[in-house]
Length: 229
Image (cartoon, rainbow, N blue to C red):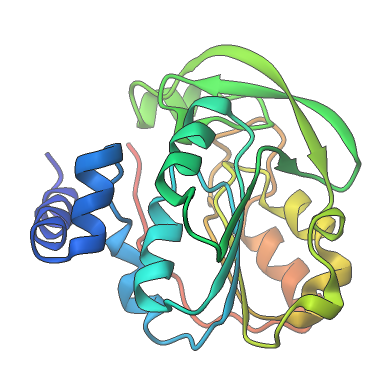
C-alpha cells in the first residue's frame, strides 16, 4: 500500500476514535470523514458550502465539524450514496441535499457508473483510469437529472464567505460554467482536477485554472497530488 494512503487511513481511524461526530457517522452510516482536507478548510472562514459531488458526505462531514454554523448545499446524483448522505444529515437543519448533477443545461445526462461509485462521471471512463486505479472501471450507466447551480441557490441568499467544492471526475469545467452567475459570491473554489485525461473529453487542470483566472480567481496551491503509473 502507498505510504501516503496508509498514513491518511491511520489518521482517519484516529479521528474517528477521538471525535464524537466522526465516530457516530462511521458507526451508524459507515461514512469516514475526508480529514485530508482539514488543514485547508481550517484556513478558510466560510459560512456556506456548495458540495458538488458530495458522494456519501465525507467532505460535508468535515465542514460541519470545523464550521458548525455553516450552511451546506450538496449535490449527489447517484441514489445509493445520496441515500447514505440523507441518513447521515437527515436531522441537520443546516444541510440540504439535491439528488442531481450540476451542468450548464437543465435536463438529463448519462452517468457512467464506476465500480467505485465515487469515481463515476458524466464523462465516459477511459482505460487509463482503470489501469491507474483498478476497480474504478465502468460497470453501467444511469440517466440523472442535471441543472445549473443557479437553479438551486439564489445569489441574494449567499453570504460572501462561500466555498465551492467540486469533485466530479473530469466534469469540473462544466460545473464551473453552470455556476458562472454565482461565482462572484464565492471566496474560494476547491476542485479536484487531473493533468492527464482519465475521462473522455475532460478539461485538464491547466484549462480549468486558466478559465478560473479569466474569472479573476487566483490559484493558491496544488494539494494532495496523486501520481499514476
